[in-house]
Length: 101
Ligand SMILES: [Zn+2]
Image (cartoon, rainbow, N blue to C red; front, side):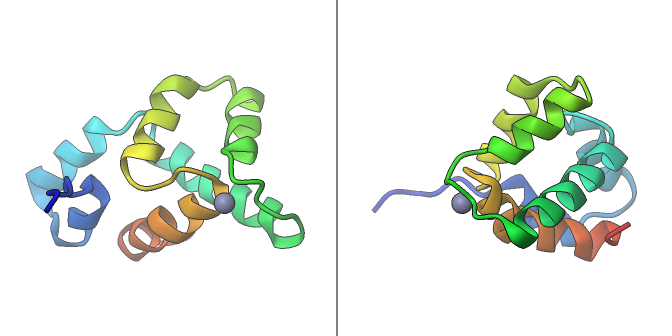
C-alpha cells in the first residue's frame, strides 16, 4: 500500500506559536496574499465552472505578478490540483485557522 505523504495543510489546525510561524515562513507568498487568492477563486467559481486546471489561480497570480511556479507547486502539494480542488482541499483548513477575510 502506498504511503501518502501528509499534506502540510492537514497539520495547520494543530499548529501554534513557533510551529505556526515556521508554517507561515514556509509559505510561497504572504499569508494575506494566499487568503486573497482563495477569496478570488471563490468569487470566480461562484458563477463559472472549474475546467480542472488552475486557470483562475493563474489568472490571479498573473494579475498580481506573483511567483506562479512557487505558488502552484505549493497548491498542488496540498491537494489543490485545480481551482475547485483548491477550494475543497485548502480553503477550509486555511480559513479554519486564519479566518476568511
Ligand atoms: Zn476542478
